[in-house]
Length: 349
Image 1 (spheres, rainbow, N blue to C red):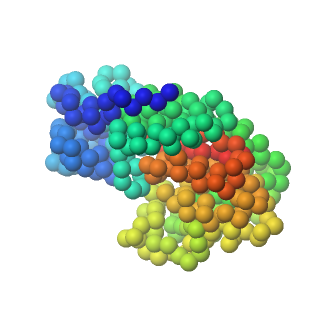
Image 2 (cartoon, rainbow, N blue to C red):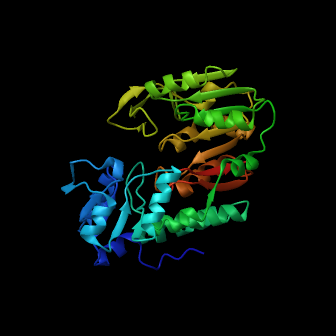
Image 3 (cartoon, rainbow, N blue to C red):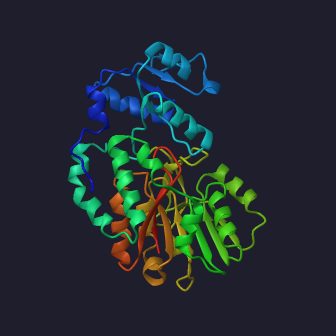
């Protein structure tokens, strides 16, 4: 099922004679270049999409277009250094992949660690523990593909397990008068998804820690009835947490951030209120948020969608934590179109 005996991406990059060129710049490229440098793997250039070509130097490389990179390097290895779900961007990735050897290296969004041979073999038993607890074959196939992608950087594994919102909400079987709790509500996009699939809902709670993003959330959901927006971070306690504010999806718990209010699910909800669905996409704070929902999970067994792409251990730490509280959950995994493996989540029903 899982074969980690073959060379992983970093081993392959160490042995290649092809020039290695990055596609994209920013935090993702910073992380990838840091890993390349640490392993003495040379990188020869950086190209960006045509509309972003500037007279700028990035890590010692002058930004160029893909056509310029082809003219300079010819046959090369391309490392995708950003994330996207936009159809035109994914189409462009596939166009380049048809001409070049292309990978999207897995780098944890939060924390350290590389999904290399040592890590994969050390945690093989954890992966199998999760694999054996899935409730359908699509989940097992998706999990296998995500693991193979992380090991190899080959985006074809992600393309092979894409699904959509219809598939995800078909698993949830939401009824009229459902109550939704959105942790990491951003600007209200997942609130809008919930309302689309459950228009006759009962109540919505939405937590968003970033103040500017929270203001957008309030604007975008102003017309909804029984909508309770809370400007706080979902966490294990309600004593505040240091948060790095980035006015977007990348705000995260950080020792270098500012102190903001935090709220636990159990503190927000009365013990007798039944939550139908909890969604967590909270930049690596999923485990503390689960700990802050222990009473709610044990008493009411809400359905849950929990992102599992932020930390390297999420692929086994999250299901182990949830199933330790309620072993009777059914476990699923789904991945929506995205490169790298963002928009991958566990679903508990």
